[in-house]
Image (cartoon, rainbow, N blue to C red; front, top):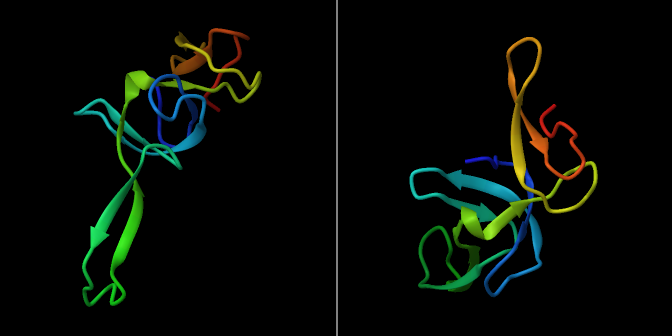
Length: 104
């Protein structure tokens, strides 16, 4: 996967199309990501010892990684991600729009 936890992404398809958010977690085995304030689902919880009130809880559900696209921190546009090797041999991600290195 070319996106990591902490990246800002934009949803490109589905009910939340156009929304931007930060990746909270990545599930590489299922090729899914959890994005902040995107794909909100409602869970009906009965009262427990941890949550004595109960009620309807809103949580972010995973979304397929192919439905999001990375937003470049430099040019602030959604972009495809390329890979490049530096002189010291480390592999870094690169913005295809502005040719800037995304990783620090």
